[in-house]
Length: 87
Image (cartoon, rainbow, N blue to C red; front, side, top):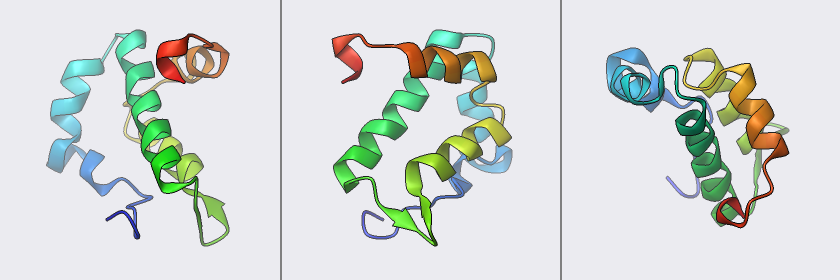
């Protein structure tokens, strides 16, 4: 998995873990930001690789948006956040 991350985040599909995760983050921007930070940290451990010409973090973020696990406001909060806990 480390050498071949799932950039489509198949695990986030509603029929897999997505419905459970959605129930935890729905309508809670801070929790959605935590999901994004988790993806960022995962990609940092991998060295922010690219697959098929696209950065893995970008592809995974797109999947989070696609599966409604992070909305636009959560992405804005993530982008603007500079607290040390997310570094």
